[in-house]
Length: 114
Length: 108
Image (cartoon, rainbow over all chains, first blue to last red; front, side):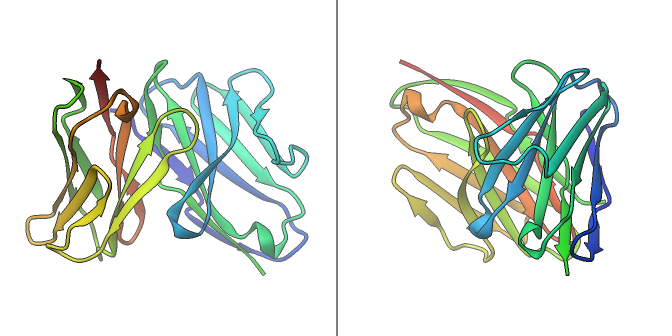
């Protein structure tokens, strides 16, 4: 159990367009989902914490109007990168919380903005 | 399908103990294996391993990869309470795949 999927796994888009990334917990209900961005040298940065039915909590320095997060159900959270620019190109990873101290990671979505 | 398995899933030790965390994997087109430490926010990158048999070391932490047997271990010597965290193994092949993590608790 405890499988988290992301869709798409890879996306290429033109500058100025918006891209939606889905994160699903396949076999459990996740009250909390987390969104991360990967930086060079494999480091991960927490972007926001998403709670089902309420607004996401963004980390300092993350633009909430640019990275829209919707946690519509206990198994789905979406991250929309609005008006994407080349500097938004990155690997975006979600994780889903099964319990208070359990977190399971998705495989990530590679975004390339041309 | 790429897969990463970690063991044990949970471990409780006392300060000063040495621990060995295991990560085994099945992956298509293996490129690297990464270890992270997660405490509060984002996982902190520890090591990236690409070659078999070459130990990577950082302070009391060390890690080694066996590409023939498809596993890696993370060693922590002289553990401290600050080592308490979830340690994640992540494989990079055709895709990135995280393992479920090992929750390490170090008691004073």
